[in-house]
Image 1: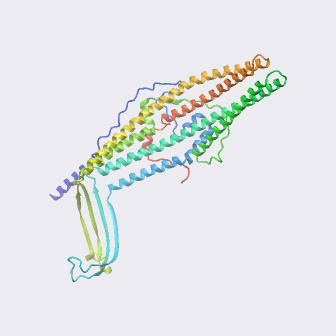
Image 2: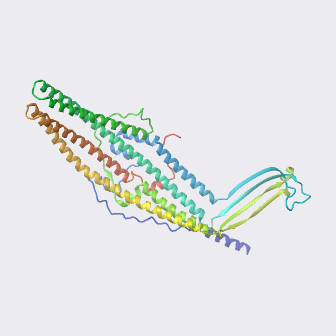
Image 3: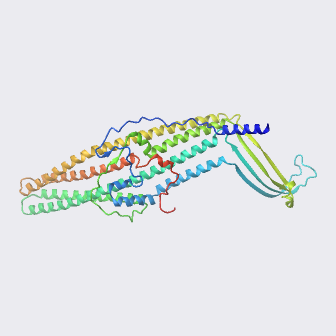
Length: 484
């Protein structure tokens, strides 16, 4: 009969301990369109296509960019910090998981003690001074009756998964920042090359006006205008070089190098605009690490509600303690010196002034907050994709239009110079034509650079080849080749 009762009690405890007081988890609903409104001619909307997470930047076919991205992964300190934050979250999961097992402790002490002669109920025959030696061990185990430990572990794992997604999001953001800075730098290289050629042409034009002025053909006003045009171009050249230097410094910081020693050789070859596989909006929820991180934090908050609810119910702790104790050191390990205690402890709050209710309400509010943040991140991700698709589409049209304007402006410069040499027009017409040509050619470079920036931003917007399947992987590569 006793065995049957024990079996029933154990079965009941197992059933109770398998329960959870957390609400049933559901991913927060958010409106998802069937397709993106903007479809650029250079975007491949094939859901099965995937970017290469470990090297999406190779699409731009820039070997120097490849090298810089690898240096960023190996040396960037912000990326290292995000990695160690993830390591902390993993350690916290192990810490919480330890609650599933008994906690065993051991202690020993040796003391010389004296009791007060006026101590209440002190025996007159008991010695006032005596030795005390104790050696013992204790085992405590909290039975997870209401799933508090299980929900705590679940919450810890969800937070760790969110932190893992944060790490991927940080890495992607840094990679994108580096790619944009590099492409902007190449844009300034093209502008500098253009301005250097322009300054040389303006120098020749100035020499021409001086020659004509010396022959009495033109006035000194034309010389002044030519000089103004040259000085303005030289100023633009100096400013472009300064902006390039700032980008070079920014890249140095990203790759963990000193800006004082870091150099990137100029390059004027245009960077091709690659096609980016976009897919459909519903796939975006599986391909962005920041969306995954926000969703996992909703799941974590849901589990924390279960943890808070368990405070309403009794906690059952099984304890056992034993050891030896004696006032005579030589007798410490003898049988009469042994002591032990064993038994369960059932504890429950009878009154807490509303503390438990407030904790549950706080946990529910935290879940609602996490849900709203998740919806905000999802809607922002859709917006970012639409923004970048729109930019790519419109900037593509603008580039073609600006190239036509640049061609026409170049022709007007040739015509103005030809007529000026024949004395048909003043140098003001030449200055206006040259200014328009230079601005048109610079605008072509700027719009093309903006296209490349939007292209890189689109890669970030669609997740850079990341997938929620990456959260299931237990291993995370350290974002650097060597230790700290």
